[in-house]
Image 1 (cartoon, one colour):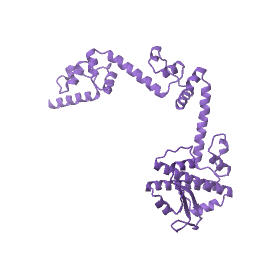
Image 2 (cartoon, helix red, strand yellow):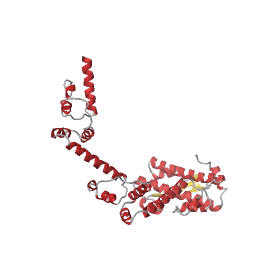
Image 3 (cartoon, rainbow, N blue to C red):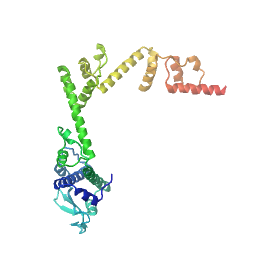
Image 4 (cartoon, rainbow, N blue to C red):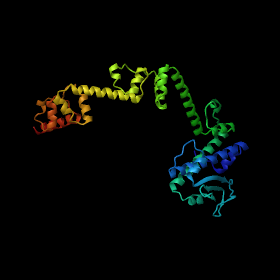
Length: 349
C-alpha cells in the first residue's frame, strides 16, 4: 500500500463527521509523538516499556521532543519556519531541559536536531507508517469495512481501540491483529483455568507455585492427554526434587524435564555399558573425548567390523589397531581410515 495523495486524504476526510475527523487527526498526532519519543529513547539507550506515558518518557529523555505537527492544508502554506520559510507542515519541538520551543520545516527539523541520519530515517519511517494507517482507516471507511468489535468488548482492550470503534471508524489491520491476539490469550486463560480446576488439591498447590510459563505448559499437556510413563521407585529418587514430586503427583513433565530424564537415563545406560567392559577396555575408551566415548558406548554391543588379523598389515595408527585388538567398536572416521588403507594396498598389489 502507498500513501494517498493529499488531495485524496482531504476528500476521504470529507466523508467523516467532525468527531471522527478530530479523533483521527488527534490520534495520528499522538502516535507520531510516541514514535518520536521511542526512536529518541532507543538512540539514547533509555529503557522504556508499554506502561510508560509520553510524559514519563519525556522526563527521562530531557531533550528535544515533538510537541505537534501542524498541517496547513492542501496547497496552503500558512505557517512559518524559524528560518522564515513558508510552510504547509510545521514541526513544533521543545527542549525539555531548557524549555526552548522551535517551529521548523522538515529540512530545518532534521538539521537543527543534529541527530544521525539513521535516527532521522527511523523517525520518518515511523511517521510514514502512521500515515499509512490513517489512509487504511479512511479507505476502509469508504468501503464500509468494519470489524465486528462488539463481539470482543468483554476483553481488556486498549482504550484507543474502543474509542475509535465508538467514534464509528474502522480498525486498521494491525489493530485487528492486536484484538485477536488479546482474544486468543483470553481464551487460553479460560482453558487454563478450567484445566487447573480439574486437578486435585495437592496438584493445584504444586502447580500454583510454578512460574507462569511452566504452569501453562503443564496444564496444556494435561489437555492434550499427555501422561508420563512408569518410573520405577529407585529411579525417581535419582531425579531433581521438583521432578520427583511432579511424578508422585501424577502430573506430566515439562519438555525440559523430559529431556533431563532422557539424558539421565542415557548417562546411566552408558555407565552400565562402561562397567561391563574389562578394566583395559574401560581405560582405553576413557582416553577419548566425551563425544567419542558416547559414540563408542552406543555401539559397544554391536558386531565388530574388523578383527586384528584383517588389519594388522595395514598402515594404520597404533591406536586403531589397539582398539580392534581390545574388541572395541570403531568410530566412523576410523572405519574410513581403514577403508582408505585397504584401497591403497589393493592398488599397490
